[in-house]
Length: 249
Image 1: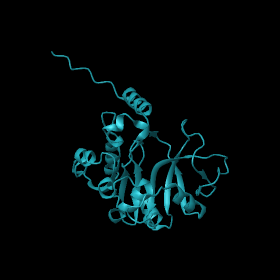
Image 2: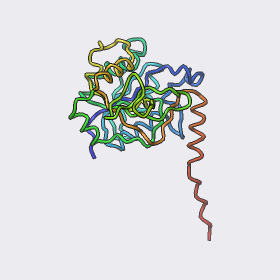
Image 3: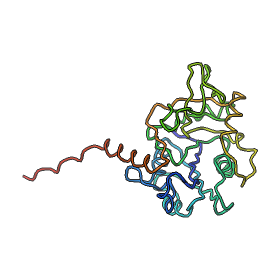
Image 4: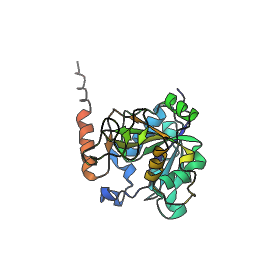
């Protein structure tokens, strides 16, 4: 099914916690399961019918278009929002989205370049319903991982995100860095301005303008060398055994 919304893959960060691996390679280009981490996202977006993707860049940014090209190998059209070239630094998440709005349109998918969520679906029907409504964002949440036990947001009884406490179940959840967003969420940020996303999300939640979903599939934050090694080991363990060669007769 065609997915008319565009997407942005956030790939501008320095990757401080991933050093020394990121001293010479942008984190989204680090290998996961035999291919760059960002390629998992591009393949998933193409699989689900997204056709245009913006990749924002800053740290070692010339390496990313050199590795990915124009996107045609995945059936995508890639645009590069080069924050380092244009502004001398990464603009943080909301600032990076604001800079890319001329490419993205009114509603769009957002995915961080440093997560691994191979079972997430960029569902065209959900995207169309979101575009027809008035939410500022739809966020996917995951159970709190060991490195983030306090979580980020609660979920109220109507499916809205809660910025300031747990939901009726007493739980808070972790933002997966997978979302649908509306341009109005970041439209007040002047292009080229550094701005974090968290305060905008919390304000919109207090206004009941953000609904949330739970992502039940595999999800990993790939933020440190240990997390990268663990993910690659897990993927290697899941890989099917190669078929034995046919016996010659």
